[in-house]
Length: 313
Image 1 (cartoon, one colour):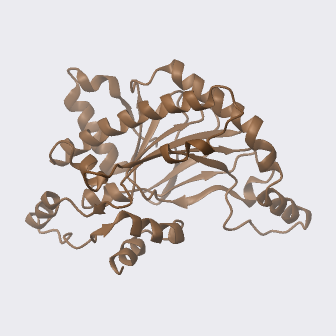
Image 2: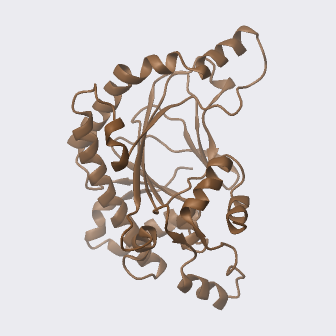
Image 3: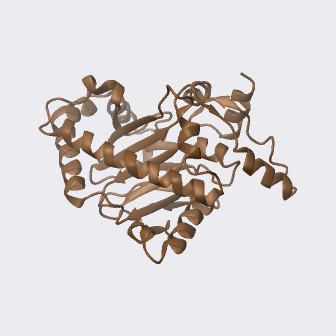
């Protein structure tokens, strides 16, 4: 079983209805799908790969090798313990956003300009996808984007996590990234061409997200689940530690402003009521910043209690 692969270039042609239906199926049945021919040039993607790999070698690798998690794993192996490392991810990660540009890596040639250009293109793609979701859900054009802004003076948050999962000498003792759902809105992942490890939970089974050169993997976060009144689900996913290869993973998040108030779209609640599906109170109304406060504490725990906890605030 493989997650859907969708040719985004056909959206503007005769097969538009078919592609819209494929995206709807990807959102409703999977929560994950891959886009090919998405409009971001291969030249830019190749530059992103290069600067990300160079940045890791030049500015990140020594820090990872000397990190507490590496020492902890070594100690576990030396003791010949059968235990696993708990509450640890075999991951090197840093965040890029418009707000922290002065903290971006500065020693890697062309890193800043390349990642700025890439983030601009990804943000446009995210907004196109949100308009497609609007249409597929029967919502007015621009509904999700407006909901994420949280007011005329507010902007949605667009962040990019640059991760590497270095080869692990004992992958049976540690996970690359613990299972979780994503807190935010629409996530666009540019994953490694060759090194796998990403898995999603589908019908109780962990399924590999197959590496596909220069594709963009899309998944929906908790806020899309709420806005869609549960039609689109945020899906559990994880990354396995791998014995070979340094997995590159660049995930960009189009999230609500921390001040945005998130709740199910009234049109979708009415539809659920019309169908006699008791969903009108499944998701509370909350401020996204409050949700993030809960999420930080409960990221790797069951999802539903997060909604209950934020409801109580």
